Image (cartoon, rainbow, N blue to C red; front, side, top):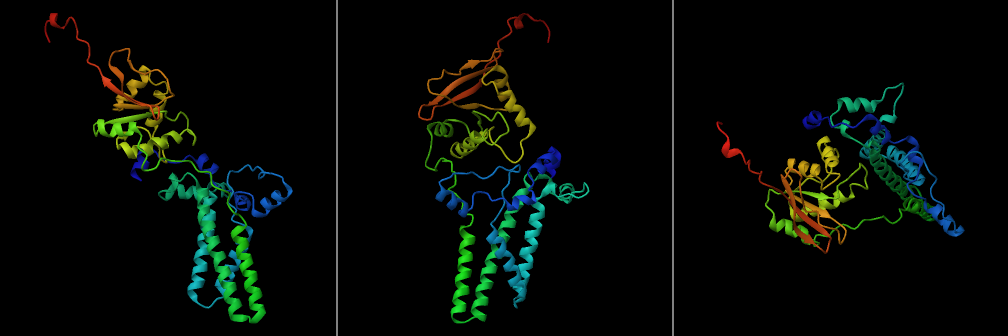
Length: 341
């Protein structure tokens, strides 16, 4: 927390408000329900979900909501006290998580309880996305729904006999199955990441031929604050686990202003300003992902202080490695004729 205060690592109120949930989001499904997909498949129509102004679709399913209510009722009416305590705990956590997920949107008369938490409770000022508290809402909803199914089955076993028991068991099983398939997720869109056995030649060269205290910078670097722009930084961070050298690239929950300034200064790499900025940061090697057949980036700064020289080329991954080498200062031709200190 001392580091957060020293560097002013706090989320802007507008960002927190934008990433806070709205209570209506809990009725918006994240994807079409099974019944909608079945109806579209039968009719041959492909209709996407209607657009919404808010980003978040936090609906867990109406069947699960109904079973969760049944679970609360069953747990409260049951004899063992620990079941009642469990239901009270789950319900309290659900309500608390729901309120926290609303973030700065939950306000009355201009007063927001979440703003008070951000001001006085350590850690809340660093939370960017309060809507993620919805995970606990959905978790407790599922557990309470399971409690409802269990309670209904216990009721059938204890109070009913013969066909009535079988009929109730069938109904409970069918409702539980509906809860499972009501919001069946579509196939996830995955991105291939390197396997542990993948070892590109350039990363092996860095590992074997550079000193342990070498500092790398990898291009391309993000040029804007978007998820897509930082995909390349993610890949460079994965490759760092292979070469095990310090690296300027990377990202975290907060980005220091000094790092953003460096990104701006190296935007025209490899011009003089970018090479001087990298030298000031102690960077000794540049890893550059380029297109096949591109000319070499080798050059010397106009002041003669730094040279960008190629040291390795990985043709398989079209990656080049350059060293930022300091050049000796030119000797003063009049130094031997000067008198005095």
